[in-house]
Structures are given as structure tokens and as C-alpha cells.
Length: 261
Image (cartoon, rainbow, N blue to C red; front, top):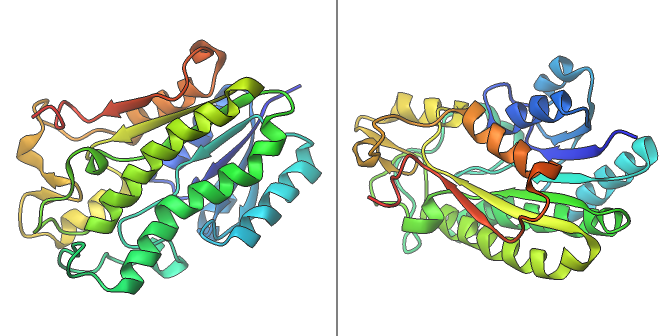
């Protein structure tokens, strides 16, 4: 029987999530794509695509129920959805707000929106999928950011202080879930990318007048380049397979040594 994987944020063709969807399909998984970006569904004709606001717990529950009704099981959950300024349908296609929003100058609505998109969403999905993962074991992979390691420098376009905090929460949630789900054979790991040439990065680059990406100055990357969505997806997919069957509760950094710098 093929494994069944849910990937949040997997519909945009220039995203890490979409590359993960394709990688899991190559591994033989049945893939459910949970996203608000309906424009990307047509290209994923071999997947079950469910329009889902993952920041809404009721919508997440419905998406998980649809997965069970269609496939009867859940073996993998990849929480790839997220963003520095939100995940509404408008956010998915618009340029990010100009300027930097720090913890001391963001609006309270910014705080709630950004934490909802990045941290609450992963919690809702993990909580809803856990009872089904427990039945036969499986894997959860969360996507954090180098921002959780070193923060976001003020002046960086297209990102925010709440984003760094939310991604730090993702790391802590990964460790806690690994402890709670280990006895059921469910592995929980996290990938923390640095600057990646995704659609989000390209949109930020278009509006920035400085050599800054969403996670800081590009000159701080010792490898001299940004990462690719394919590189991130390959690692995430590996963490979903039996090749990493004794690996859990781990945060894997993928940032060209920019954190070390």
C-alpha cells in the first residue's frame, strides 16, 4: 500500500512545498496538497488538492477528514506553509509590505497573523494528523528558518520579528512532538533553511533597494549563493523516508553556513 502524505503550502510552483510534493510523488506516495493557492491545483493533477486555510483549525480538521475519506490513512505530514507577511489568497500573489516590522513596532494584528500562518498552522495540522499517524507510525517534517537561529536584522525587507519568533516556536514544537509521538513510531524533524531562491525571495528582491534578502544580508552567506527549493525539498523528502528511520527530534540547518557566520 502506498504511503499517504499531506503537504501544506504545496501548490505554488516556485515554492519549497511544491518541490516536496513532486519528490514525494517520485517516492511513490499518494499526496494531499493543502493550500489556498487554487491556481496551482491544475498542475498537480495526480494529487488530491484541498483548498485549506491552515491557520483555521476547523479547515484543517476538514482537510484531514477528506484525506482519510479518500485514502484511509496518513503516513507523512510536511508543514511547509508559511511566510513573513501572511498566507491569505491576496498575500500569496501580492508583493510583501514595504519596510521591516519588528517586535516593538509591529501591529498586534501583524503578530497574530504571522504566528497564525507559521506556528499555529503547524500545530493545528500536527494535532489533527497525529491520531492517524499513531496507527502505523510515520513522519512529520516541519519547516523553520535560519531566522529562528539568529533573528531578522532591522532593515531587512519582506520579513519581520514575529516571523523569527514563530519559526523558533516551530523548532521547540518539533522537539516536543518527537517526545510525545516517539512511542508510536512517529518521527518528527525540522528543516531550517537559510535564504532560498523561492518565489517569496524573488518578490522581496524586486522591491528591495539593498542587498538584503528576507533573512538578512546576502553577503553573510559563506558559500556565496542562496539555496534552491530543490535542495531543501530533497532533504525534507529524505526525512520522510525509511532512510532516516532512527532520526527524530532533530533540527537540520540548511543555510550555506550563514548561521555559523
